[in-house]
Image: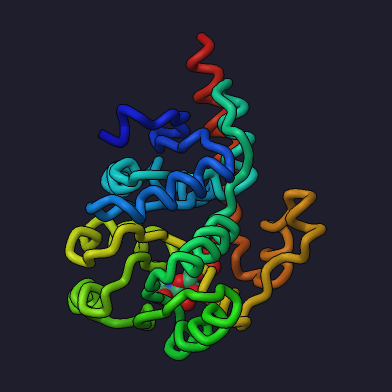
Length: 247
Ligand code: UDP
């Protein structure tokens, strides 16, 4: 049903929603009143390149209820393909806005991911930051066997689950487990728990404004350079696809 209603752009096989931030937020809030589990993914160019190389992962992304353009590269990609998205919708910002609204509704959130101790630290900070929000459970992201996590989420009665295992692990876990959690929204939110916990700082506002958040993360974690080589590869691949479409 979702794919019928969704207005998307196909970026290297991944269906990315063209909603702006406010529409994405309203859509997510509406999910809270449904009786099914909704996956929200937040791909950047690196994730789209992973999906381009791996059809099974691409199918996982395309089974989501909503896929928002997290990276500025995705926004440019859509523009090159002549089906622009409204704006960048950063997964962290969408999560914050949703948690603010969820707090007002007294909703329960489960945090899954990060190194041991990070989710607990994030939980404390988040309950202070989002009044009314109840963090009903946490689990770190380094369990060998994650089969018990879905039932832990279900027992905790969570409405929303932040799944922060990095890509592709988080999307694959959500796809396989979402229907067993009883939750309404499961978001693949990458390194967000580290930011909520305060163990990693988000890029200063100026970097975000200039669309240079990726550059800030590279300076802070130079080991990301290998992963970031996918940025130019993404640009070239999208350009080639755009040309082929024209031809
Ligand atoms: N992580 C995890 N389990 C794993 C691998 C990673 O919980 O097996 C966590 C890691 O601790 C970090 C997050 O997943 O908090 C991934 O962060 P990354 O910066 O890679 O994600 P991005 O924000 O780039 O999507």
